[in-house]
Length: 84
Image 1 (cartoon, rainbow, N blue to C red):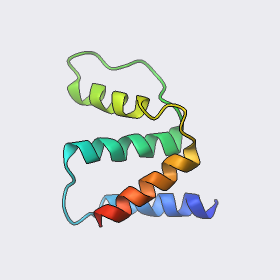
Image 2: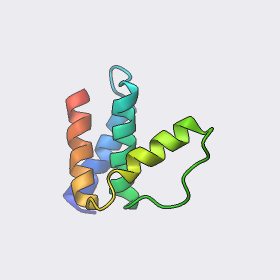
Image 3: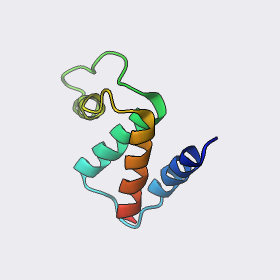
Image 4: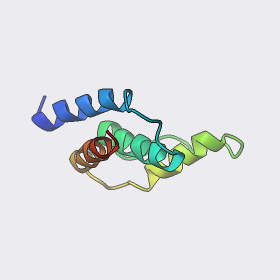
């Protein structure tokens, strides 16, 4: 594992222990950056219209299409650091 991967994994652990629950927009950004960093571009079908949370997550991740995994990991780490 690279240093970036180690820091990304540590940030994911720290995200579970934040002092306060972030607002929904920040949670969506965290989700999208994590997925882009760990899985790459969005995959699979968009959830159905009545799955509001699923659609919001899918669309947040979809907006990051084309961003490199390393860039997403770095932005995720920076976001978690700013929330601590």
